[in-house]
Amino acid sequence: MDHCGRGRHRPITCRHFPGTSRSGATIILALILGLNRVTATEFSFLVGIPTMLAAGGLKIFKAVHHPLPDAPHENWGMLLLATVIAAVVSFIAVKWLLRFVQTIRSLRLDGIGSPWPA
Image 1 (cartoon, rainbow, N blue to C red):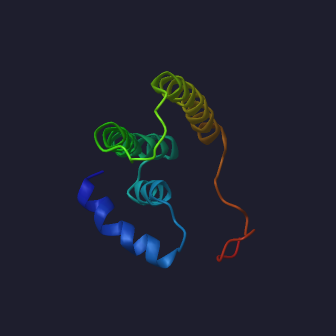
Image 2 (cartoon, helix red, strand yellow; image 1 turned 135 degrees about the horizontal axis):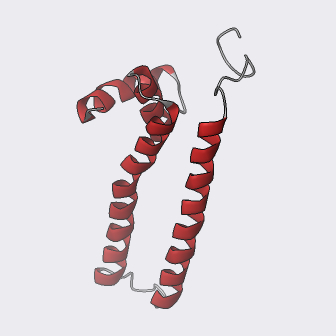
């Protein structure tokens, strides 16, 4: 799936379905383009990794190079521990979600909360 396809279709998806997340829009478009659910979900998670790393890196850069005058001293050891724990828990959650997507037959809600008839 090319970047132009995602970029071109995301505003349409979000305009017609308010509240649609970036990952939801990416999965929907991947399914429309013919990818299977598991591949679409994996791709959606992989697309988010660089964004999260860049945002975290920018926040750390600002904390180190431009600290606020009244900000408390950073405890880098606790930050590292929290980062490792968050990474482990995220990995477990993503593995569970991918297994769940592989085992379910359909993501259809059978009309519950859906604007389309079942």
